[in-house]
Structure formats: C-alpha cells, structure tokens
Image (tube, rainbow, N blue to C red):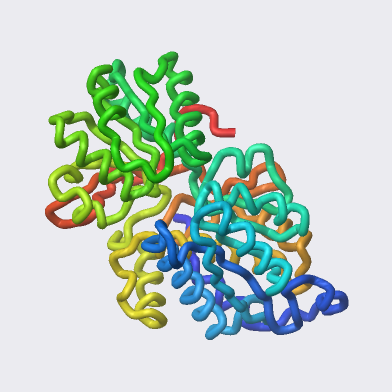
Length: 399
C-alpha cells in the first residue's frame, strides 16, 4: 500500500541548508539568504470576511509551524496578510501594494474570482506567482505562466454535481441559478459541458447579480419549469436566501451548491430550509476523521486556539499554503521565479492526508485537481456529511 503523504511530513526534511551557491538571490524579489516574503490577499473587512479572516489565519499558522521547524530549504517564510475587501476595485490596489511596496515573491492566495481576475494581469506582467482562490476554468485553461489553481474549479464541481444527479435520476429536470460573475459563469459552463456529455440540456437557467437578496422570481421560474434539481452558484449568504424563499413558497427541489456555500452558518441563516442542502466540496469539513485534518487541528490549536474550529474556510488557507510550500520545496535552494514554476510543475499526486484529492501539476496543467466529494447538510447536528468515500472526478472532459 502506497505510503500516505501528509501535508506536513516533508517539513522534517527541509530544515537543513542545501549546499548551493546563493549568487543572484538578492536580485529575486522577496527572496534573501534567510527569508521568502509572500502575500495573502483576503477579505478581513467586507462581505466575505467570515471566510477571509480564517484563510489569512491559516496562512499565518501554517507558516509559523513551518518556520518553527526550520523553514523550507533553509529559509523562513514571512507572510503578509493584506485586506483585499473581496471586490475587484479594492483588490487591485492591495495587490499593487504587495508587489510594488512590500515586494513579495509570490501571492499564493487571492480571495474571490472577480478579485483574482482583476489582479492576474499585473501578476503576469511582474511575474509574481499567484494562486487565485476563485477556482475558475479560465484561470488555468489555457495554462498561464505564473498562475496555479490548487483545488477543484467550479467548472469541475458543476460537472460532478450533474454526474451525481444523472446517476440517481437519468431523466431529471435540472435548473441552475448562477451568480452573474466569473464564478457563476464557470459553474454554468461546467454544467452545460456535463449535460452535453449526456446528450441533454439544462431545463432552466436563471442568473442574478452579486448582492441580490430577493430571489422570488428565479425560484418561481424553477418551480414552473418543474425542475427537481437546482444547481446554485453563490456564497453562503445568497444560498441561504435562495433556500429560505424556496421554502416560503413550498418549492421542494433538491438544491445543490458549490464549495463557496459550504458553511455551518447555514444553520442560523436558513434554520427552516437548510436541512438536506447538498454541495460539491473540493475538500473535507473540519470535523472529518482523516489524517490531514488531525494534523491541521493540532497546528490550529497551537497557534490560534480553537477560534476557527467551526470555520471550514480555514482549510482553504491550509490547502493553498500546502501547495505553495510543496512547490517551494521542490524549487530547491537556488530560488528564482523559474525554479519555483518548475517546482510547482513537478508536484505529482501530492496527498495532504485526504484533506482534498491528490494534487498534480505539470507544464501543460496548472490545475491541481478536478475531483470533489458530494456533501449534505445535517441541520440538527449543524454539520456537513460526506457522501462519497473516494474523491471523484467528472465523467465529462475537463481540459
């Protein structure tokens, strides 16, 4: 049986200096003989702060642990958490600050699809490795030099949801309610791609703008079209409003969302409508009984207590930190932008103790995974239940 590779196991092997010349290291932005400076763009003050603060703390905790165990290839990692406010107009100046003023080597996290899209041009221009949190198909297809997406995209999550529905009910009427931005459009494209694979079409398509609070017209349209299943592309607050309004008119379709909606806050935001809500998840919940989560919880408790024990978005920061750390390790002591890119592209079947599906990159693949698991919300116990034993990839083409 192949030995499991946990996200932290490699740290024990990176506490020594490699005997490689450091000539030219001073010329690499954010890199010195003893330190690598990185930025984490996340929301700490706006609409997505409930997710963003946890992500930022995960970065701090992860690399505090790494540094306390000797760093990576002889260097400590300095993390600068910068508030991007979630929105594009606030994310661009935040990214410019990290690049131009703080002079970070990389930005291995940017919260939000639209925010990631708006900072991507400057990251490509300045050759700053960047990991967009909004896992959009367009971020990695076609491959972009310095852009890497660690976890499963909304495109692939939608494909997995369609597979699950068709396996249960081949002739199901499926609708989609999508946020009219890059995240929603990617999920719509993924759903269409999956339906085409089965020789079918979506029964009903309804869009909405970010910030919408009244979904009555969209819900009635789904009901009138007799959709037994409705894919929902939104974050937790909008999702809760969708569920509440569907319950209000007695519409009992099975609603299936994406990773961005997986949060136990559903229990308080939709106390009479969230039981049985389903979603596709790119990673397991924080209470999952898997080796990687056990390691994560130990680190969390040591560096930030149990403050984020109920916030699954902490895992998001952990995954992005793990991916960056592994790429940095494989880049070796002679660190440059090019060596880091090659390091990332050498990641093959990287396992994090079953926190997510195995991660693989390559010169022609900058998406780490296309696999996900179906989860279902248990309102009584305020937790998401994992329905799949294994990580499952969509049957439809993903690249």
